[in-house]
Image (tube, rainbow, N blue to C red; front, top):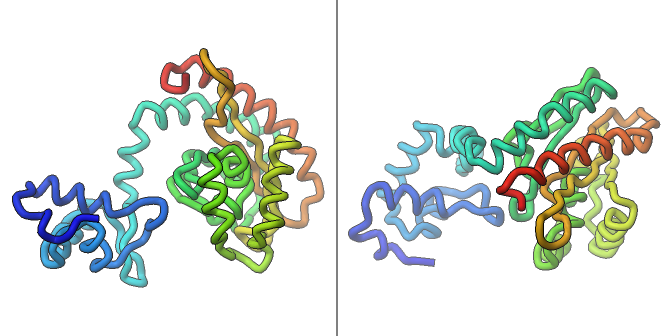
Length: 259
């Protein structure tokens, strides 16, 4: 990581990009001093730039004083070809699932060690769902996250297994058990959770696989449903998700960016 001296001669734009570049999947929330250290920017300059970026919406100041990437950058990111095409392609299929189930439907992609929620259709029942479009949640604690984790490279899986966070008292944090769960997701083709991210909820999710012109299919996203914990029909939702996931995958395979 660069020291403060690297800031000399940098343009204002370059320094602002350095500040934003201080954030990554391993450090999604940072204090002002951590931003300065990680970006190699003097603290006084960091203070000014962070203030301007927060005012514009590129950064958001949390109640604990730490900063995280702001919603405006997320909104701009949705205009990137891959994200935009993914949401446009998937939207009618999510609506189909919601119409058939009346439950909350999620679409997520992997971003580092997090599941990034790119689309959501709310269900009929009030459930304590913490995810919103643009939110990032731990891979190991959500249905869509476990699907994405099962398809992730070995180094990502190993990093998650080394330090899984406990989101609720039901979150699986034992490395051995979590490893077995990942293997089971790969074998059966879907993941399920019970109150691991939010108390009072169950979730089930399946992978969205995209065929490529060369090489094996890749998991481009995960499609999931969240229901109240009193429901007993969770596994009956898997075929509905699988049909929609296959439809999304077929459409995505026609998009150049996913080949």
